[in-house]
Length: 614
Image (cartoon, rainbow, N blue to C red):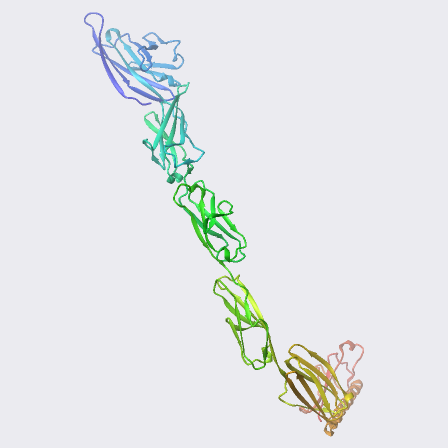
């Protein structure tokens, strides 16, 4: 509770001669309390001009509504009694305490209707009379403000301010005030720009409800503006505020700028791609768009803001435009984009398909593919690179030159674009027998069979025939013959009974070439017989030595030590020595017992090494 002190001095002359006195009375001018709180209204008094305190003091409390001339007593007291007046609004809610210095009125459960003037009257009869008042003020904070924006969009083309939002603060006392803010800056009424319509309602319980409607002339920049309201209200000894949350209103404005771009595919466009062009403007709400290509009067079918071009070709290249439908009556508003569809035509190879060359000739092959981008050409034969560039030079043709040549054309900046072509080269010439430059000379034992092979290249494919001299016809035959476009291969089997000369004849329309095989028949020589006899004698000697060792072993004449090996001769073996090593079979160690000279048993790991010098 707050209040200001004021003093009123009143001097009243008592009835009777010679008696004079006065009362000095002190009260707050105002007292402020919250609704439903208790209010204590003090009234301090003192008597002056008397020799002693008066024996009789009468105190009365009155109440009067502000601006009303009549007042009503609510309390009376003197030295003998205290009376709370009946049938008033305060009969059950007030309490008065007094002492020699003053009296205090306590009002419990303060209501809005208690905002009145309370009078304190002190009467000491001959001692004097005085009264003073306190204005009781009651405060009730309102509820938090509630703001509501306009749900529909507001056009910036409206000539007058449009309703943007409303704000309401309910159940406050005294009347609260509402202030509007735009982007945290207070709005001040301005003709043709800002209007505020205030509606104040007094509720039946005495509360005030205030509703404020904001009318504002929006601009395009207000699409991001935030609007809010703030309620200010008085409380005991202060003024407080409560702010609403901020809102954004939907602003409608025409399109003034349009942008058109290629959304798909990313990067360069080639024939066969599906292209999506997207159009976007700065208007709100986004308008539908009209698409056209180079000629504005010819509309293209589209889906709102997207134009889809399936499986494009080079004829789809050009300048595309889009226009918003809400741009009527305005300056030309459009978006443009240049679409370039890249292409790579099939490769054209010259000579075409196949080409016949004579052996030793030169040929220049070319490979070209029309493209909108820079290309790279590479030549391959049998999977290996043989050339680079649009032309391929084949000089001094040989049969190895024959084959299929493939040119691959690629676009480095657009790898998905590629094509290829081919040419089949045929080298024509007389037969060329493999190894014809040297005569083949062989020597074979009479009676044996040899196989002779002859290969010849050429085009047309050569045919091979054999001419065998020195052997009977029945002693040879062709065992294999095969041919392809470039090679003929033949093999004959000949039984050599005497010296033989075999001639391989390869021929075609371009010529003939031969290859000669000379085979000399030989008989078994004396030197060969000696070698055979020596081998047989060695085998017999080894068999004899083995028999002797086995016999001695069975008789126990060969001592066996734990060392595992015994040498019969101490002479150092040479490279011509024959060594025979005998080992016991561990599996038969229990079946055979070797007896030494002394009759001892030998272990299964004992072995004998025999070195024989020739």
